[in-house]
Amino acid sequence: MLLVAMGVAIGELLPKEEISLDFLNSRKLGIDAHNILYQFLSSIRSHDGTPLMDSEGNVTSHLTGLLYRTINLLEREIKPVFVFDGTPHTLKGETLRKRTEIRTSAQEKHEKALKEGDLEEARKQGQRALRLTKGMVEDAKKLITAMGLPMVQAPSEGEAQVAQMVAKGDLFGCVSQDFDALLFGTDRLFRNIAVTGKRKLPGKNIYAEVKPEMIKLDTTLKRLSLTREKLIWLCILVGTDFNEKFPKIGPKTALKLVQEHSTFDGIIRATNHSPDFDYREIVDIFMKPDFEKDYRIEFSQPNREEVIEFLCGKHDFSKDRVNSALDKLESKASEKGEQSRLGQWS
Image (cartoon, rainbow, N blue to C red; front, top):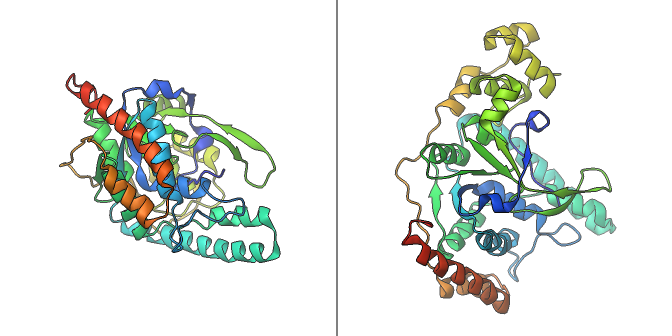
């Protein structure tokens, strides 16, 4: 299993707390929808790295994950609220272009490895060749709605939207593999929530246990002796989705620089590097993000017929398996419907 990591590379600096999923019992969590769909695309694949597909060649790995793993969360009394990215900031264009190049190259290597019968290489390159198309996102939205689960469309970054919803008290935290949610001000970031088990370490024949973990913003800032703005400075130094990293500066060096200087201009002078971007604009992206104020969080009964028609009729899912999953979903939704009268669900 390969977990897709985008965003800022500061994981080694962050204090992480291993948690049980029971800790999230009865909590509403904002799911970074694009991030979790990439996780499903990465982890739900055949032995040669090829994603699951229907008879028409449409990728269905993300839909498989949405159905079965979301129901697993609901059975653990976790309340998912899916938040989708909107229009990316113009500064993100270069990052998106480079990701496309990487995926195109990986796809070519994947096909070559398949022809040569190198399944290990094919699996590795197949996971790197992830593509989440607009059509796949729209299919995911259809399934989420048919399952009776809440969905929020962000104007720009989904993690920024979640951060505002957390700040209002409507959500307990953000579920994402990326650390960007902390920069947007999310109090609690939860990782490894929907993907559990073992994962293969990159480039090694070693597997590590994937366990749920929580990263708290206030604990992080105290541990690193930073303000949130200085945490953003640190991430600018190591590279964000909106800027190239400063050359020859890793997370530890970046932390030292940020701790030692009171202004980012001072950091620029200390590094002798003149960035070709305005760091103030990137700080504003995180500190003053666009977000939707008028949203609704409502859970409802799933539409069984619509789910079956969509998954089984259109995408060749097993009707028996889907019906079994829907039995669990309807049972949980009915239970929550009773609880909602006491204000415990929606």
